[in-house]
Each structure stands twice: as C-alpha cells, then as structure tokens.
Image (cartoon, rainbow, N blue to C red; front, side, top):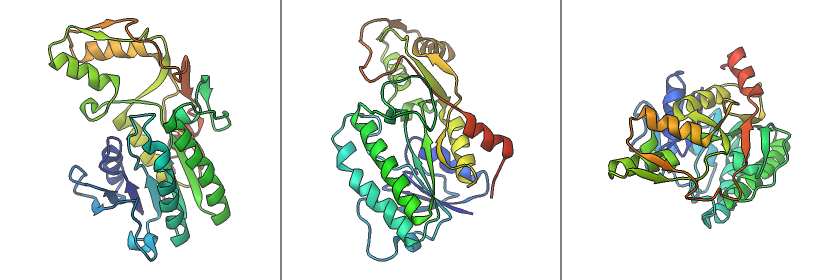
Length: 280
C-alpha cells in the first residue's frame, strides 16, 4: 500500500509518517522541506501551489491514498492566507483525483463547526467564525461534491485540541514551556473553564494511520477521545507533569469569542475502525 502524505514535515505530519511506516506502509512524504521526516519514507520536495503540467497523480507515484495535511498558518486562525490559499488546495486535490486518485483523506478541524456546546458528529451544522474554520469548511464542502462526482472515497479527519511534542507547536503548552525556561513565575491565563477534547499528537497520529489504511469507514471521522476536560484542569496537569515552577494568572485574558464552552468529538467512527482493525 502506498500513501502520499502532504505537509509531512509539519507538527502533526512527522508523527503520522512515523505511524504509517510502523504499519509497513510505503509512505511518499511530501513538503517544501523534508529534513525532519523519517528517512524510512520516500521523501519528495513538493509545492502544492505550483502544480506541473501533465498527470500530477502519476508523477507522485500513483498512490493508493492521498493524505492531505499541508496547510499554511494553521495556528494563526485569522491569517489572510487562510482564504487566499483555498483555491490552491482545491486545484491540487482535484488534479490528483482527475489523475486517478481513488481515496482522499484531508485534515479538518473542530473550527469548521464554530461556536458549539456539546458533542460534534458528522451531522453537526457548521457555522465557522474564524478564517481558518471558514477555509476548512469551504474545502470540505467542495471536496464532498467533487469526490461524489468522480467516485473518489473521501475521509475528512476532524481533529480537536492537540498536545505533545510541545516545542514544535504554537499551543498554550508550548508557551508555558517557554515562559518557564525564561524564569517566569506567573503565566497570564483565561478563566480556563472552557472544555476541550485533548489528545496527544502521537495518539492522534496512530488514529489517523488507522483511518487512512482502510476504506470501509468514510466521510467525516472524528480523530479524538470524545472526553471533554476543562482547559484549566489540563494545563494544571501539564504544569505538574513537567515540574514547572509557574502559576496561572486566572482571568488575565478574556475567552476568545469563537471558543466554545464545551466542544468535543463523537468518537463512534474511530472506535469502529479500531475495533474492526480494517487494514488493507
């Protein structure tokens, strides 16, 4: 089995490549720079914004699956590139499908849904309120239409709050580590009351690897635990786990207007995949 992974050198991508390789999958790892990608993978320099002439799918080795994880400024939710890059993602993915791709998996996000209170499943209505969420939502809708027309399997992988490998991301956990290294004793914080579906990046990579190596379960798939935990509880636990001598300054920042009070994924589909262990 051959799987093309775009964004393979990214924060999540590197972990997913490792998880797929551990399943003895032939991984074609693509990114602008693949220096940190596992050398067991076939590594290719790829700019999805500049597609060459000809059958692009064949040029990339005619993979069984394309796992599209490439995305600029994923941590900057209102960056102008969110909407500006949208047509390039669409052009790349449709070129792959037109070339002969039969299974496409794309990294989605909880931010497609927007403000929500409770569990999110594939039927939850979407009303995104950040540029990142709007762009991902638009790409998902367009790829559902295109994949249906072309008889290409689509798996839309929704992720939630990711931690682990914390110096490589831009989360609050990364910022906590930096503050502690700088010798700071307090850390400005929100109320921490909002609840999220936290998952370690290696566990997320494991789930993604299981999704894309099967094709029975399709559509929107939540790669999550389905267990909401308050941000305060998880951050306090992180401080304890890492023996950080730093205290949270509660209420220093207001909650972001697009952060939901309690948002988590319905894990029914991912549990089905894990229980059936369907690997081609």
